[in-house]
Amino acid sequence: MNFIYLMERLMFASRWLLLPLYLGLILSLGLLTFKFLQKLVSVFPDFIALDFDATIVVSLKLVDITLTGNLLLMVILAGYENFIAPMHNVEESERPSWMGHVDFADLKMKLIAAIVAISAIQLLESFMNIHSEKKDDIMWLIVIHVTFVVSGLLLAVMDRINHPPGDSHK
Image (cartoon, rainbow, N blue to C red; front, side, top):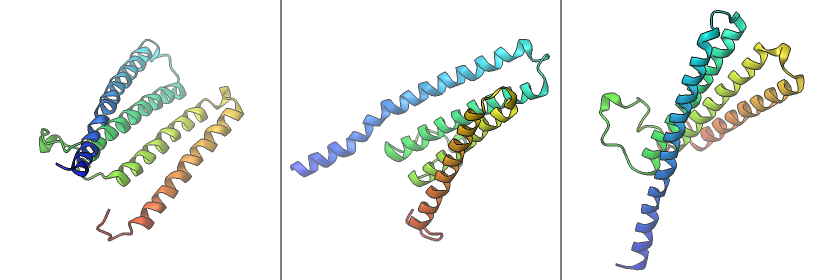
């Protein structure tokens, strides 16, 4: 065996160093699930007394946590399949429809879309509590949200330029 062959094998095997990172994301997803349940349980004692706006804000918090969980799961599954190894031990009926078809560019667009949605929910929560929010804080939330939207649009434009419709080399 020559040196080049060994180096290439070592570089290719280094993808497995990502595994602990994905395991950490799985742990993070478990902690996020715990926070979701904690928030849900904390609402129950006072739920009847909540006014409509407070109910909407609590619901938006739960949606926000759920979107973050979806984002984590997408990164875990697509990242593992794209960068470590294909998953052969998953029944076809259990696989999400996007799994196995999401490359890095697709994942990047799904991530920015989820981040924009999460940012929009944060902004909507602030608008629901506008009477108790500092105007500077709301202004910064708007600036950050617009930054995410513009970033997403620029990423989409760059992706379209790199891979025009009908281009089979994604």
